[in-house]
Amino acid sequence: MATAAAPLKDVGRGAAGCRGLRVSPPAPESLPLPAGQGHPGAASQMAFFNDQNVISNLKLLSASGQWTTLGSKVTKIEATLVPCTQTSMSFFDRLYTEGVVRENGVIVKCYDEYYDDIPISDELRKVLLLEDSDHYDIFSESDRKEFLFCLFKHLCIGGTLCQFEDELGPYLETTKALYKDLVSVQKNPETKEISITSTVFRVSAYDGSGLCYPSRTAHAQTFSYLLLDPARRHVHALYHRFGGGAP
Image 1 (cartoon, rainbow, N blue to C red):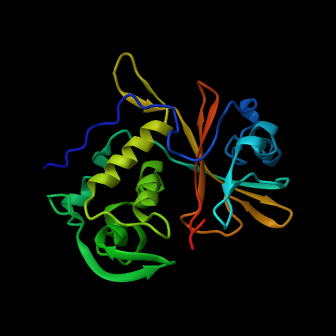
Image 2 (tube, helix red, strand yellow):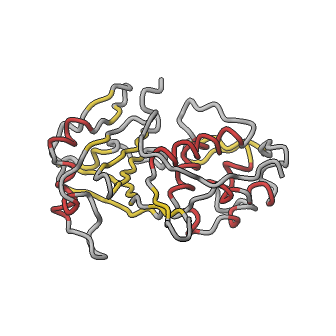
């Protein structure tokens, strides 16, 4: 099969091409970790967003398409731990074997429909969005929680002015490039196996008026992921607002 995927090697640590921040955060206990499961409580979660380094660097997109800062004191944080264990793009080979994508890489088309303002015109978007898709079950619920899957899904769905690709290749290439740029890894010197050291959270912040970050309005394609690199004590942010700046 011409789509044999190479493993993700030598994962980088930059966030090139992503609007976000790369700052040295406070001590680990001040990072926005979810309460419970051995993590610090709500006060420590808020410390990250109320840190002056973060306040001056963390950006969000206004409805008019302008980059701004939070501009208000964060009073509540919701942080969901996102599994990040995948180290090979072979994770997506099932899209070929299950008929979502043809052997030549062309995505199978379908009749047009909409889901939450998102146009669906092919089997790829159906398998990503619609539970009643014939192919939805090729990815388990645990598969769908993986950061690699989330990143791929966000890129495939895009924004309000997105021009969809006819072939799968560009989506896989962009997903791999971003994943390598955002995620940190280490190699076991004995087994030579690669393991991921980054911890990933999908975060939302609230102020006195309600949801304020990543946007005042919630949408599946409006998101902010924080990726913690424990070795370098860096936080990488991946952010997108659905509809920001659209006419």
